[in-house]
Image (cartoon, rainbow, N blue to C red):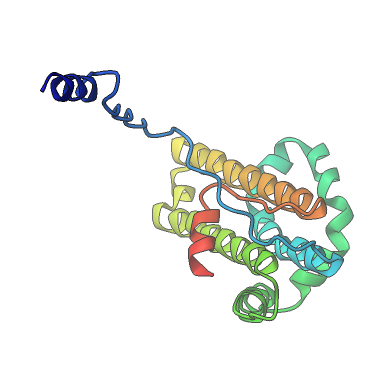
Length: 195
């Protein structure tokens, strides 16, 4: 009987009892998504991915007009692409055709790797988001107020949209050049859900 009591006592000791794991606190940063593919990337995958980011960049140049007017030397950064941009703008409906060509020809084409399709979907999503400032400008129409706060807010907004788009373009191109998957804020989650 004594041995039974001793074994029960040792079993019920606090040190022998399993400890409850503390609840993990929610992380401030979401877990990083797994890589889109584990296979090495071919050069053509990178080139198609880089070319995808040209669509939203070309369409965002209109938002940089106030920035280029204030700082003309910044225009030198985009001057090398003027011939390509002029060709793009000379074709009527080129933006519309490029958008659907990218979406239907690359994003929905399963013969392309997930890496290429994800980058193309990010570019398409970014291009769709670039339509929001145009709609807001047409709704609020700060042009009738002269040079008041509405016009300044529009200038700041357009400059902010251009800077964001330019940074997304540079980040996407550099990431694709080195073979990494770019995850653009506000865009990557939406693009990932569409694949």
